Image (cartoon, rainbow, N blue to C red; front, side, top):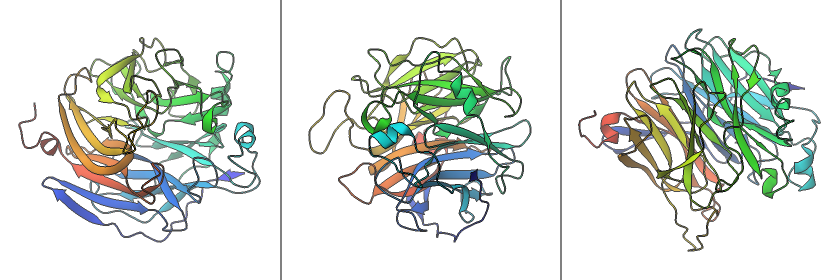
Length: 404
């Protein structure tokens, strides 16, 4: 059975670079190091006490999303500057059942246990950290830490929550996040834990298509979980909505910001009064390009929301086509002061190959972007070279101008 292994591994040297005034970049994981071919799918949260937890998928193979994958974490206690050793948070042993849709497409085999899509949530009321992950894209588990991510409770399976979707959507693949979930900080449902999820029928490419997005939530500190409504269906002009990020707006509404394979190549946005039901009609945000890659979002303070993803719609081979992937380059950070209605400020974070990201904010106003950069194979957008934390403040983002 699956188990959380709390041993630490050899500390990787954290290379620090300062490419521009007001920003520094710290490499946390490097491909080929520590017994793993790739590190991908970054997530990051700041706890109630200010500890920063950065986590990812550690992949033994570089062949794709299936196969032997562990989940690793590094901890920080000084706002993202210096980092502790790697911790193996999830390692699954034994001959676990393989997802049938992956087996049908020859994507996975017995013994290659896939722990995927890690999502952490900082509980600001109790100080705990909640951690969700999936196994073989068909089971979901919850763990909890009460000591700033140093140790974790045994995993508790919560797949029954996803079973509640079956009468409406007979999924074969499920995935949390990835990135992070949130705890609602205002409104009638203050304290609610909200995690975006996506589900797939598994009949299409890579067994991840077609797909829809929704949320699950907990109102009792992670003891029990409930499904929400399907937030973004797979219905024209939206095609295959999947990896989704979440933020609470100043009026208490919850906004989802989703990746899709739609011809519009724009991020999809929808809002709900409580993060579970009553989702607005999904719309494309013209300001946020969609190269078909995970993005990230966080509330930096009471007035500002920050968003990051690769700001690019080109391909170096020139073969751009509607609904098809574009090159993962030029991860950029955008700032909104009106709850995501507009994004007037944008600044390039990483020129060249750069992909998935997650965002967090510390109490002193520092924004942390944990993201993929560099490549082990320049011809393959999925072979990330490093996972890096960039530290900057809003003054850097607006290039020295006054922050409203």
